[in-house]
Image 1: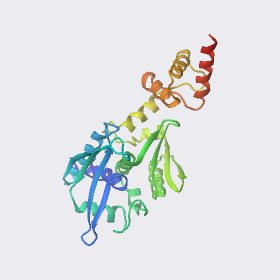
Image 2: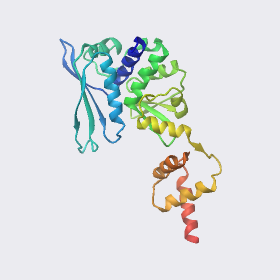
Image 3: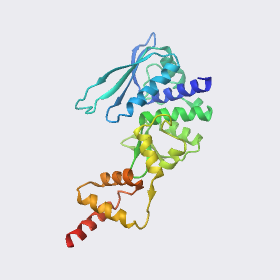
Image 4: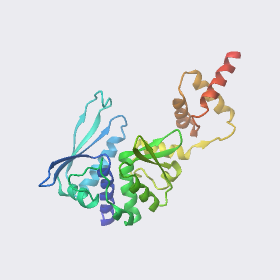
Length: 269
């Protein structure tokens, strides 16, 4: 792999480091930390995603191994795929030099100081953002958007997206910040890793590529929605079924009225 690919791997891993990698600070004087990753087994694709993340670490000379899966529990009903990383000085360098944090500061509570990333080559900014999105992002079916949990670094992530000419909306819920990006814009920059077929990436691609009937539905769609409603499926289940089977996106808003109309008509027959 050439130097560009290695730096891209480092930026992707750094995005995860800011996000969902487990960071356990052991020795302040020697700046030692243990790092691991746990991904829910609810989505089988997370196994490939975890292997990709650890593959990035291996390209940087960091030994990684898959460990025993975390079993199901009340707090984690699906359990988790788990990997452990070798103790390595690069993680301290990530924390101090790349994130710009003091050793006692933590990513969950303290803002990073990463203005240098805003001036990095576009490809490296993208790979950092993809690491963060794969770690802390989600796809919203209801309004065809991507959310990234960003507290306490909402301002920095918005500036990063602005530098990539991606329009986003900042929102705060109970003091926690997140950034919302329209699905088509998220797709344009391949915000989820384009080299791994994750469930988030697959859903985003389906939403962006689906047919939409903003005014009048064709008769087959009216009939199918009514049929699924009579089967007892809820609004989300109906929308997902139509998307997966017919490559068609319908909004959940107003679907209850349509289902009710269909059911009333069926009772009159």
